[in-house]
Length: 342
Image (cartoon, rainbow, N blue to C red):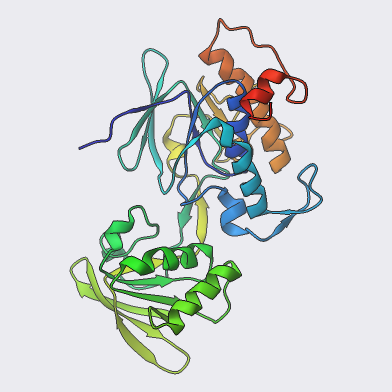
């Protein structure tokens, strides 16, 4: 049974910093947003690939990490109550006769909106497949690259491979409901938050899970169902039971379905104007690293500017008869009330 259609003003594809700031600019104009991202959390490339890496060119912040920037943006948009849909990919965008868009994700959820904003960075992040023979046989039934429904892992022998935040977060989240939990990482040095590493090692000490330092070997199973796998350590090759495998080997960026949406492209980037940042299809906008125009600079700063101008244009499409009065948040009591500061 399909989910009921979701209606909103704007669908934002991508929940990185630019997509998040677009929520703020659109919210000031009373436009409601749903955001869809292939990752399992907000922040895009900033939070996923370099959460602790310092960024030096955000105005007003001499230095800020990718995760801190994401956290600040999430707090900034709280007054506008955006709705997030993580671990999803958009498969189709269709324009209806009345000018609305029907946006469909890979779970069959349909969003009906007036405006589509593509803020997908350089494209969609796709999980890297581990270099393991025949792993594709088990994908979708025993091997997964994201957790969409935790209950699908309950009472299973779960093996998670990786040493970053995603791997450790899911170890901690799934451990209470699984039959057995094993974390495999090539070395005893993790890229995840120290607090998460500490909690994981405490579970190991308590005998509630195991940590194996090594690399994936062969997978064994019956049909598409995993039953066991080998792990190559520095001393030996061991075999462990597994019915659910979650490899977190990082991400690669691909244009993905965007290429099939009928938009004018320039070297795999979406061509836009510099007044509205609208694509060749009216009502579909592209902001951030996914777009192209003369003089384009791939900076977060530039994406914030693009989000502000895009929002003004989006409002004119949704409310063509409404007079838009430009206001400053520093002096407008109306805007301050929306932000909950007045």
